[in-house]
Image (cartoon, rainbow, N blue to C red):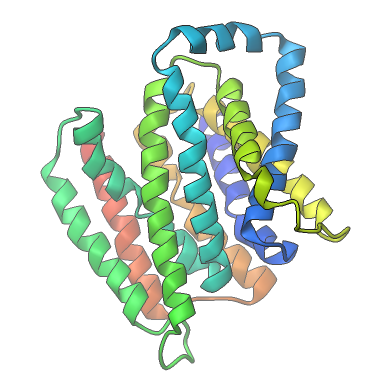
Length: 287
């Protein structure tokens, strides 16, 4: 059941690019409204279960409470860069570039978490670097002669979002055992919304965009994270990481179905090298 929960969460997240394209708002507004809506929903859930106060007191006592502030900062960087990638390159390219995150985790974990470094990490770095180079400097679609500057920036943004997401993973590894998952998600969304509030006053929200924003707040920012964390109760972290590779597959399929969008063979090959490098790291750590 845990594996199914993780797969469902990942498939929900794989539809994110479709929503970003459909909303038609600036990225900062999309992030703000989806996080604000999610924060309200999560606040209600915490009031109903009565566990927020105990976890908040724990945050005040524990030095790790400071890391809870770093989570929204990493989230903003990750999300804005990821959404920029969705709007400037193919959805498949954005997600594949984003999946450099496991490589950055492997590089940073020995520094910040004192985890043992593995020889496979360096092979993975080489493979992912080649894969990213193929995506950046080769045509992104079958009929394209060259890649536009905007599309190249989109892929770079996707890779940079992977760095921000790697830091987010490292922080979550430290605090996940200290706080209720719903509290972490609530604080993350609420602080993000507060930080972005000054930037959205002049951005109007159309009636057409509202259903997508509500759906994102419910699906992508509340339901998916909750069932994903629940899945960890019976699934090993390495297995969950490997299951994460359903996301670029699902995103590519959904982009083709709804947007008739498919990256070229070279970009797909580069993306496959990135996925392979991530898989090698988690396979090596799982031994």
